[in-house]
Image (tube, rainbow, N blue to C red):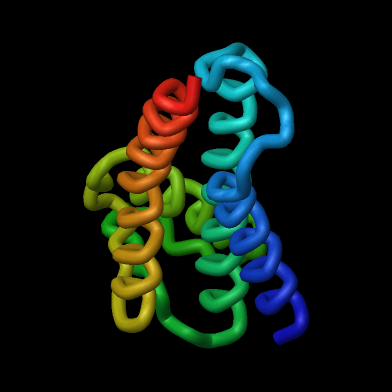
Length: 132
C-alpha cells in the first residue's frame, strides 16, 4: 500500500508542477519546456502502469488480456500494465488489453489527464504571451 501511495504522490507532484508559475522569463515554447512535457507524459505513463501492475499482482483484477498469452509472471504483468497505460494515455487503446472493474475508472482518469496536458501547455503559453 505504501508503494501505491508513493506512486500516486509522485504523479500528483508531476502534474501539479505544470500549474506552478515559472520563475524564469523564457518563452514558453522552448526545447526545455518541450522536454519537460515529454518527461511529464513519461512519468504519468510509468506511474499509471505501475498502479495497474501493482493492483493486478495484488489480486485486484484491473485489466484482462484479449490475446493468447496468459502469463501471470511479474515481468509480463508489468509490461502489460505499462502497455495499457501508454495506449490509454496516448490514444484510445487497441483492445488487446482491456481495463475491467476499478481499472476502468483509473483508465478514465489517465485518459482525461492525457487530454488535459497539451491544453495546459498551450494555455500556459497563451497566458505567458499575454503578460508581455
